[in-house]
Image (tube, rainbow, N blue to C red; front, side, top):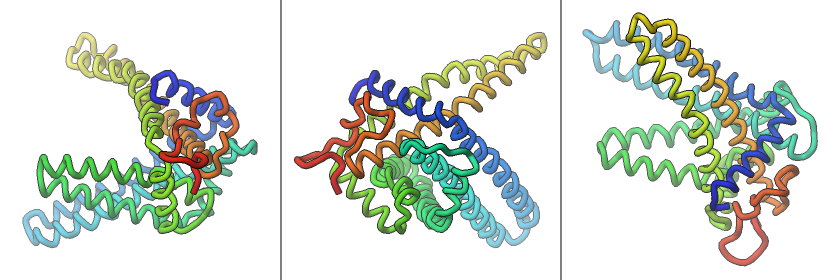
Length: 288
């Protein structure tokens, strides 16, 4: 699956699943709206703390800022992971041939809320540590943090489907995700990267609309056209991002199912998904 055409095939297969249950695309939208509300909720206390302690007890104000930042990271991570878990649940239902909807997907994720909470704590801790490394060591720290973050993403790539579908603890899910990664190899990165590349390419027109609109708004005679282009670009991104997020979740779930039992999920039979988790050595694909 090392070619762009194979990535196109995977996206098409994922798209067919999403087409059967388009409600899955609403889950990232709900997550984004919830994140905006959370960001606004946390911004007010931070601004207030800076106003109160800016000229007073700066140390206390700084500590309060950090507490709020950590809480913001955690709540944001929980929202993102929860709705990603809902996408995984819905995708798994469809891949098993069962009908589902937005409310059922949310209910399925809610059944795993403790695991989602624990996973949110883990990911928040990792992100804060990586951010601290990047800020503490400057350019070198940024590179190191980026590499560590990439390694973490690869090792934990299947952790969320394991948590949602199997319902095992976070520690066991991490072990199993790591074991799958060690026993299988890395063309899954090509497939996932292919979806990301496609998302980037289809986002270029939206970015062009935004850039052109922003440039035109500086000219009073073209203000109306500039605003129109900005709105069109924003709407395009509002459609593209949820679709690509849902497609990525479907692909991730299908990849987990194949890695776990070696069977091609329904709808992926005509793709080269088998190569995404081919074993490094002998044995059946995805063996644990």
